[in-house]
Amino acid sequence: MTDIILSGCCGNMGRVITALCEEDEQSQIVAGVDSFDSGKMPYPVFPAFDQVTKKADVIIDFSNPSVLESMLEFAKSTHTPVVIATTGYDEKQLQLIETAAKDVPIFFTFNMSLGINLMCALAKTATKVLGENFDIEIIEKHHNQKIDAPSGTAIMLANAISEELEQKPLFEYDRHSKRAKRSKNEIGIHSVRGGTIVGEHEIIFAGTDEVVSLKHQAMSKKVFAAGAINAAKFLKDKQSGMYSMEDIIK
Image 1: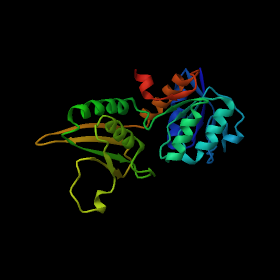
Image 2 (image 1 turned 180 degrees about the vertical axis):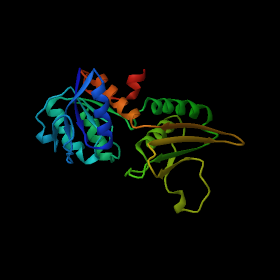
Image 3 (image 1 turned 180 degrees about the horizontal axis):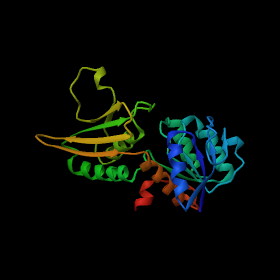
Image 4 (image 1 turned 90 degrees about the vertical axis):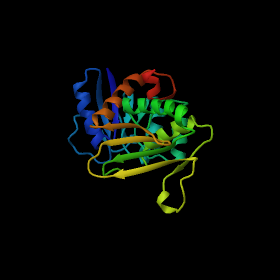
């Protein structure tokens, strides 16, 4: 059994993870952390990590970047592994995660979906074959409540593509702000926000007289919740260090 502290338990993803854990014989949530306690969770909810009194095997975090520092301090002081699924971190916060991984096991990815991580691997292969002769664009779509743009997943895909290019590309977010032809050395990243779109990502490789595209569409938040729970089971009892979905799908 994997005992879990769920950060962001009262949010949309928190409720989905809670429901899945109730059906899972190998995991259980022993406590939640959320400043907006709905009073409806089947486990104790603490307003902040410095008030948590429960022990667990792993923390799953689907909260807000503002929680990161206190969560990492709690994780280090209790030596509790952390599955980080929150997005929207700045460079300083990403460095905090890297530093904390020296003391505790941390599973960090911009997307918990197995399909997205497969898409990432396929994008690298496609870039090796097409990248130097094809223009590359990324389009991501999410619901109208998502705060950060572009999505962390879009950045993850762009970074994966960049690793395979001989000349490192520029990421172009605001092409509408300038009047100029598309440069060869860029990857356009475009964000769409509307309705209840769970998550959709498409990579377009546009060449002369042909277009190749890779596309992933999440139909339910359960995709990400299941991935986070599997990551928690994987991370339990691991040594300190950084882990990702690649370590699971090897």
